[in-house]
Each structure stands twice: as structure tokens, then as C-alpha cells.
Image (cartoon, rainbow, N blue to C red):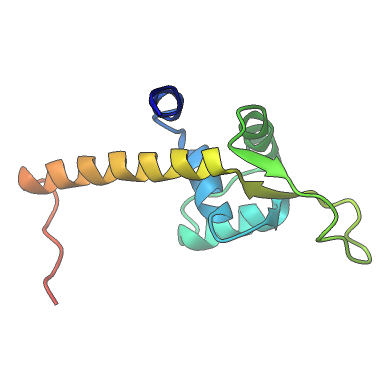
Length: 121
């Protein structure tokens, strides 16, 4: 679908915060604080998001239909105020396209010997 492809490509490149949030949600629904923890863990502590960056990004991502708030399934005692988020199908396509774009950049850097080639196992 041409218009869908154009919409996905129109979202690129992603900001680092958006990329890391999408990666965190790729494995399933999470509440905001868990997203921040997953990002910090996955980046070995190199990427940390404060509440303003995290929730501001999530709001913009919701407005852009990359993520959506989930309903009800995660409600537990004491967790009523937590909002859980998940990738939308559109968000997953945007994430996949951004990862393809970044992989092409890494490949180009390796061809120019700016990055080492991966070890052959």
C-alpha cells in the first residue's frame, strides 16, 4: 500500500527516545515506569529518561498512533493509576522500518571500515 508506506517513512528518522520506547514495547504491554526501566536496562544504563521525556514522548506517540493505551487487563490492586501502553500495528511497522534504516547505516559504515565487521562464528 503506497499511502501506508509513505506514512511509515514520513515518521522517520525516529528520535532516540521514541526508538527506545518502541523497542521496550516490542515484547508486550508495559506501564510507563516499566518502559523507563526496560530502556535503562536494555541500554546498560546509557539511556535514561526522566518523566517529562518519557511521558511527553508517549503522549506524542499516542497522538501519532504509534502506541495506544491498553484497557483493563493489567488492573491489579494498587495499580489502578498505572497506564499501560502497547505498540500498534502501525508502530511496529515504523519500528521495523527504522531498524532497517539503521542497519543500512551500520552496513555502510562497515563497508567503509569505520566499524569492524562482526566476528564469524
